[in-house]
Image 1 (cartoon, rainbow, N blue to C red):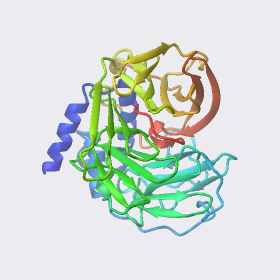
Image 2: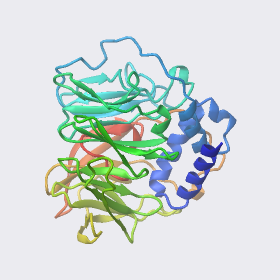
Image 3: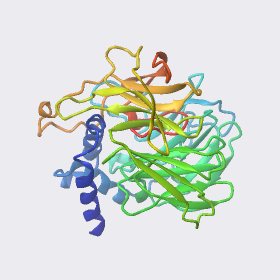
Length: 398
């Protein structure tokens, strides 16, 4: 039971410092997932642990038959986004033709397809939980996902239908409770990280040359140089940090690593187009005053030095949570927002019943000018939480 002890240590280490806004969403997510896990029924004392245990015990599911709702073999236009579907929300309706735990991709013209090859996050019959990340290239033309058949990551070109499979098997148990997948613009590199780490490595995979580089776990991959030689990572718990590792290849080299611990709690954007800057929003949340945030700042990734600070204007008045996503240009970054009620710690009863499936939410994105702070609305998306929504480009470190 060494790995069980490691999980408890991970939970103990993370809980005191984690961002309350994220914890609120994650707790709701875990409660739902814990309820649908048979194993968690025997371990309700630690709901997050129940979800993690299910990752290790979920059986391998057979591949379903092809249907008209599946992603076509080729000829698919670039994507707008993707979202994960769970089919029994506590309130409201699930998407038509919903597949439990399945990834559904949506093209820019609004056509939606399920990625049949991608591992679902639920075993058939809702008998267990497993995580299954998906990433979209910045231009929306390629996706990366965990292939249920190949038992590792796969990159797919949507127009040609060409698939590239990673040269190393990645056990399902490595996928963790929350995982991140980043796909390079050209589809050559895939970076993977997750929590808890169970001492398993994070990975940077060169899909063309078929080599694999180990990375430190728990760090969110937020940027990669075009040649794959330098990666930028973000960490938000227990403290906000930025890390840059260069000279990554050959895979046996130690690389050159530079880390900076920031004096404040920040949620990061992906790496900016200049390759040396990130945007960040200061997290001011406390247990009794959740969902509080500061202004937008630009940070040097190597030094942590603040280059500019500005207030964001133009968001809807009911926005409660803000997450930074893809850069649209050197001056604009995507902001993903939700408008959920943020309850203080004292408002949440200890015996509050678990939610099997959270309701589907409407989330809005804005383009925010990092110089002026002015926001313009871009699009609305529907998903059950920010963890179930994938947008083109690298993830941000929330």
